[in-house]
Image (tube, rainbow, N blue to C red; front, side, top):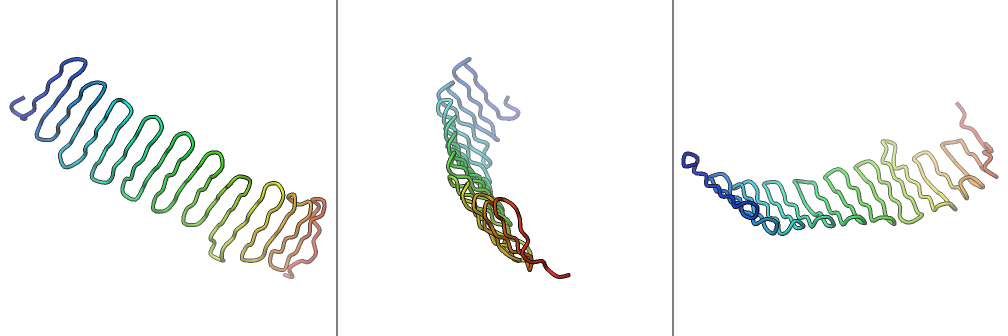
Length: 181
């Protein structure tokens, strides 16, 4: 098309090319392809498995179907399927190393599981609230107003919340003191 200064060629099914003032595309099916939108983005494929893309805000590299890497602005991702996932942003992050490690966090909370150990943390206006559980044996936690511990999830345990205290024996809660109102 001489009016738009676009030249396009197709030799079906193995060769394709396109040149214009806005973009350039070249492909040798199924082994190689390159597409560029001038000053905006560039994508390269080598075989059907490898793909690399860059644009104004980031990049990504993929080796299908196993590896996916990239960054776009303040967000990034790393995936090594099916065992490792990591998605990170400016306000949150999710990481999984299946089946041993799981971690999800944002600006106010963190939840993490490593094997049979679970940790949870919440930032509250009154202070930090956190707890740790070693499944199924023991758990301990603290809040701004108190703390707790348990053996076998209440077989034996103790909780203090302000002036209220409770003891547990054989999973039965026994109040020891109450807050006066």
